[in-house]
Length: 507
Ligand SMILES: Cc1cc2nc3c(=O)[nH]c(=O)nc-3n(C[C@H](O)[C@H](O)[C@H](O)COP(=O)(O)OP(=O)(O)OC[C@H]3O[C@@H](n4cnc5c(N)ncnc54)[C@H](O)[C@@H]3O)c2cc1C
Image (cartoon, rainbow, N blue to C red; front, side, top):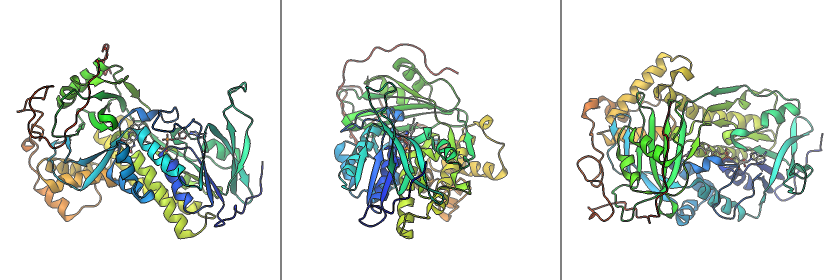
């Protein structure tokens, strides 16, 4: 197969870009390209819902997805006003740690204004709002129910298009015959299941070396309606794990006044499959608060499990021979264990890197070497941080032996985590670390040093959550119980409770 490279479709002269996949990496890459190319086509295998409907291609959407502050800021840069759009659609702003009860590795974090604002919403809603913004751009076209099957080679080591096939329910294999979509720039954003290594091999290129670090983490998620009259002085709850107890639980408010609850286990145990098991597993966390909060709530659907969480880096940046005008982005390039909710942040930031390089270079030709390296450089700290945290979570069988630097880094983080229980500077730094992906040993600053040196002994950490409505020393609010003064109040309507039965986390 070969095709003359198109010199563009007129307009600015940069031609037609094709983005394969309309997850968050594809949508944000399309946004960056739309500012530069004459037109952009987003190819998506699924039928795209008009609103925030569920779709097959993003099964992880059933699990709690938080737009961390860095992702929120990056999205706003790409789509000015989108935070207001998301909030108007029902996304809930969560000030970290002001609106959260957060049990860190060494104890409860104080609640204060750290200037860190996350957005909590169902993943389908986030995608829908971003998709709608792109749909409004006349340069962008969505080609839904179409699957990319391979790349088209151009002259002189370039990619010149994508072969696609459309869904055809009358065809014996369910697909129409494939056809070529010429393109001047192609982005693969097809997520963890990306076929780019095979597509490259078919064109005679080497396949990339892969670093894959299997993680033992499993996830179980479900939605709840809060009990009628529920009152709390927090809107989100995060109970982090520790090396000895690598189980984490989180509750995030999402659109429709609902709660998205996810439990994860970093010890490879089987995730709970139903609500009864989920409740028992919540009772096994480091603090009973999550269980106490959800046991009076109404389950709104099944419990979904996910165990496909390995860290995988396909080293495209290392390939010496590479077809120009082709880029791999998002989970298709580097996918991380979602324990820290980095994936969407990295997708958004990768689109910003694309935007920066395109603008700086002034052409989409001859930039993929630079782009691959810029992306790799940008993703490396998050990769390192994810591996460090795996080591810290006691998953050593899955990792090579630790070096001195990593051990020192972990001990430093442990001191910072202890300091964070009583010192606002340290708490802010701990939360920022989760944002910026600094490896533990890096970025030592005077403020951090001071905070860590005045860290209390672990026993000094407060044992009860910093809440006037929940936890030790307070009575859990039950429906109908008079409210004490509350900051964030979440009220939901209870439906008949689902029947609950069967087993919980089992090794
Ligand atoms: C349990 C869990 C919880 C998570 N929680 C968070 C969180 O709180 N915060 C966070 O930032 N991240 C979180 N993540 C990570 C986040 O979901 C991913 O990093 C993010 O979805 C990656 O986006 P993507 O666009 O690269 O891939 P995807 O979202 O997987 O999208 C890929 C798209 O490509 C389409 N596609 C695939 N193949 C083809 C083809 N051949 N042709 C056409 N279309 C194709 C698919 O249909 C899909 O639409 C979580 C992940 C998991 C598993």
